[in-house]
Image 1 (cartoon, rainbow, N blue to C red):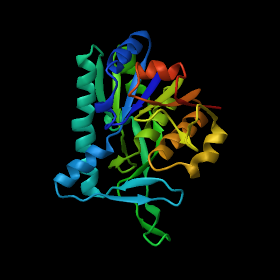
Image 2 (cartoon, helix red, strand yellow; image 1 turned 60 degrees about the horizontal axis):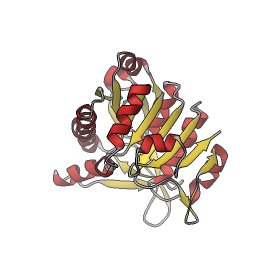
Image 3 (tube, one colour; image 1 turned 30 degrees about the vertical axis):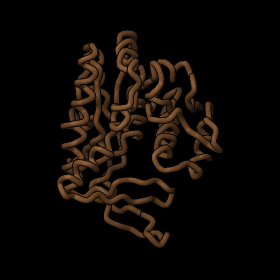
Image 4 (tube, rainbow, N blue to C red; image 1 turned 90 degrees about the vertical axis):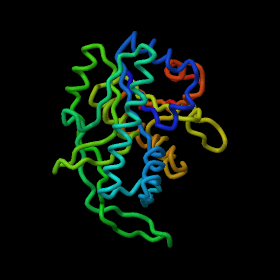
Length: 266
């Protein structure tokens, strides 16, 4: 069982062999996709006249500030557009893909963040209302397993249910980690537009989970969430977390073979 996290913006830059690779892997074993798409959400929101705000946590993690209107746009773009583009692309290439959100079957539950501690423009910590952002608390794999057992490839968008049944924006990378854990997946592969984690101008090919955790403060925006998600996946029982490029030949097969990527293990 392999869980693949694919960014919405990575889809356009995938290597021409990627779709055949996905098809070959889905023929051999169970495959689940979790996708992102933050840039598309931002673009659509801006077109609708809803300016997007981003905040930075004391740990240096940058994320979207999600108020009610942004949560609605996020749900619409993630589930209505990006999810269907990915499903359509897979179906066109012979993969029996089906789109889901974390809402369907109450698959993904999250705690709504009541308050967010953020760093303001002056570099000071301040507390703001949590809005409609969530921290995943549980993933129920029943619906995903039903689909896998019927020969389908689930494609999941990262929207979760709060305790009050609000729709919450959850981080796609961390959603992939939690889905991989709930499914007892062997591997989770984060497909991105670079070969993996670059530190001191060098690709890090292997790391233990402890080394990855220690490196987090030195990692820039975007990649820090992927590395954090890798550490969470390993902590929750996944054997191997890989960060790899989607722009190389047979990207997932290449990542599983540990070619030119970052592999994080216990």
